[in-house]
Length: 301
Image (cartoon, one colour):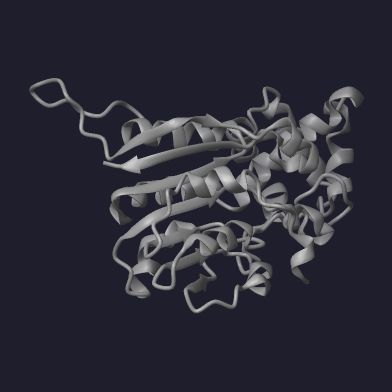
């Protein structure tokens, strides 16, 4: 597998501009993928700069950049602080993340991420993990399935979807994407089929990869590893992710409000920089994956 299978990185210039790069700084790209964002960061770093990248997908390792300033760590970004420490890095000047599934993962049929292909139910971003889409669909009980579809797919008919899957699998295991589609056929009216399937797939994928838990763990570590004035530049693709990022930038929390001191001031770790950035129509035409991207930039206080 080669670089060609990775599409252009989304909001490339805007995301890297958001880091406000200093030449001899240390930066982290926690979603390396095809290496597009990383290459742009390296272009802007001087000889004493350093870039550490993370990607839990084995395929991404094939895109490793041959540059003495660059280190690639094959791990989930939820462990960012631990592995930076292991590599002797205690604080950084900026951190970039492009959440969601890479276009490469969508385009490889056997990975099972895309509704376009007939494939076994898989959807693991880290192929070493045990939990796959097959396990979720065939082994979760009805209540667990309902929760997955409701929380992560925001599907109003989550109870019916869960009930139908549980009834069907008592006869036969549901092994492939086509089997899953046919089991849920009555909930997929022709005009809305793609949209509803995308929500169902999103819900299963988030559960398989524990994406929300990983994102929360990761966000909580960012103020600890960023230097004062260090930047974060994060792209989200669905409302669940974007709400968490937005909320964390605003309050340093995911729920509730930060406590006020006696003067009524709140102490939050970050301040937002600029407004929400979305791709231009031109970028969306060139790269359909960009259509739902939202970029938020913040700085450590």
